[in-house]
Amino acid sequence: MAAQSSQDLKNKFIGTWKLVSAEAQQPNGEVIPYRYGAGSIGYIMYDATGHMAVQLMQPNRPQFAAGDPDTGTSEEIKAAFAGYGAYFGTYEIHEAEGFVIHHVEGSLMPNNVGTEQKRFFEFSGDKLILKPPSRQVGGEQVAPRITWQRVK
Image (cartoon, rainbow, N blue to C red):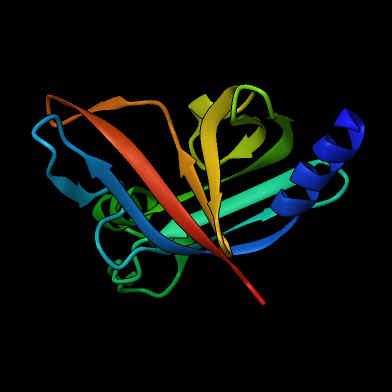
């Protein structure tokens, strides 16, 4: 019965999910936009073979004046990088503890390659809510919450 339960949970993850919101709760209880700001867009995908990929971005990033990424200015490259996040790898679900681990094989952020990204999860209807560990943002400890909606 437990093996069936684990497979059922894996099946709940499998698919494509569109970003609904990325927010963080501050110590005073206030909820603020997280990482790429209000209006962020993105997708996360989990497949049946145990692979995953995620991409998030701020849609209003400035365009490169020359239209060529090879000739972008330092400021253009910095803004493009700062407004985008992406990584891919494999995943494993820890059902009893309520978290999933993303084993990062490739990432826009070089420091994340080879790391394990732990995300607590919950399902609510057709939504998947991922909660990365609390982190320091602007000198305050915040609790991130990223909500995804299953793509039909």
